[in-house]
Length: 149
Image (tube, rainbow, N blue to C red; front, side, top):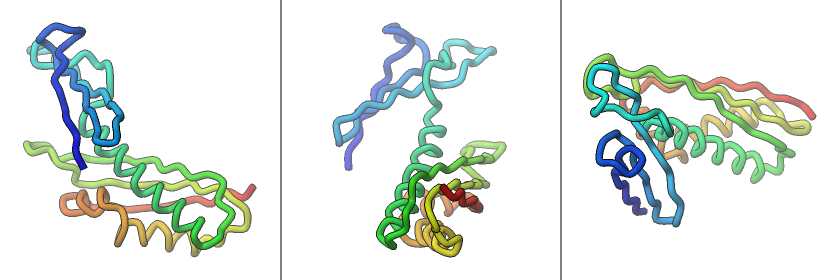
């Protein structure tokens, strides 16, 4: 897997904290820093997600992917899956994630709650590389709701 991240500056200037990632799969992702009121030249323009927000989003995508795939392989009639992530970070550098809660909402027909619970556990224990890596510094908890169509 490869990725190239390039500093773009702010709107073509060499100030600001904008970045573009070009992934090995041929996609781009734009990131930006938060504005800095004290030293504006060190901050971003709030034009895109923060780099760590993309880490959190990627973790949610990784785990939701697993949950859907596991349910589909179990021949469950899954129609939708979303996950809301809430995270806390350390107060001092490095400001790693210390707590992450993932709340899944799974929609489908006649899916047993035990199947959803098992899919989430399998993702976090075996398949989701992102959440397993983040679990080295963060306490990761999960919950879910199951919506019947």
